[in-house]
Image (cartoon, rainbow, N blue to C red):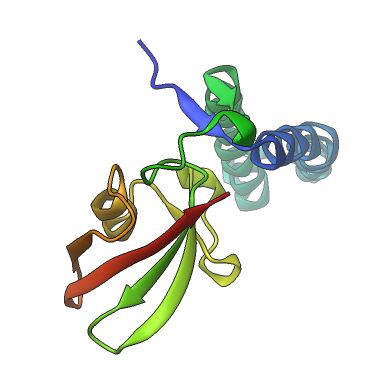
Length: 157
């Protein structure tokens, strides 16, 4: 059975837009490239044709995977989330005890993660370490650079 993906409404809409863009813009573009390469003659020694066919294959695989993610996605309603503990879509204010600095992260599905926007995946080391924890709890998170001690200061939406 496929894994259920929990997404925000924004993440779900963005995924739909990406699939539509691939189908309506990128797929025709690659088809034109294949047709142009085919018009250049002998296909057995046509590197341009081979490259375009490979790009088409990779793009179709990407579309297929994204459609599978979308089909197995559920939109989370922020109003129904339990704010007593950290979960997906939680906005968590943390104290990084290692550098004595406050940070804020929103925990999201893997394909919505964007560190520049403060969105981290629930499958990332920090996301995994925070899941299910409550305000006031301390947690030591193992990251590639070592262990980071955090204290959970606030959980919101």
